[in-house]
Image (cartoon, rainbow, N blue to C red; front, top):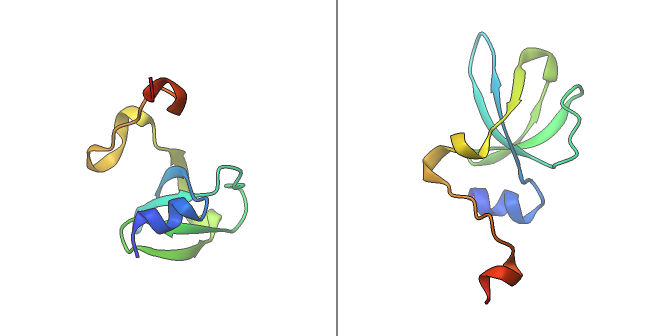
Length: 82
């Protein structure tokens, strides 16, 4: 599977979790409560996982800091079709 599988399933919010152990690069649903246990897509392992929140500190990945050269369009689909 790829990140595209997660995106099509609605996992579009990109977050990064840090801890004393491993760090996590994840995709979650936009409305995911990061103060409770949640399901996420692990971008490193390319699989869905369950995350225990008390083990990590989470931050949203800013567009300007997106990994792997991702680019974000500022135009809507209607403007792009003109």
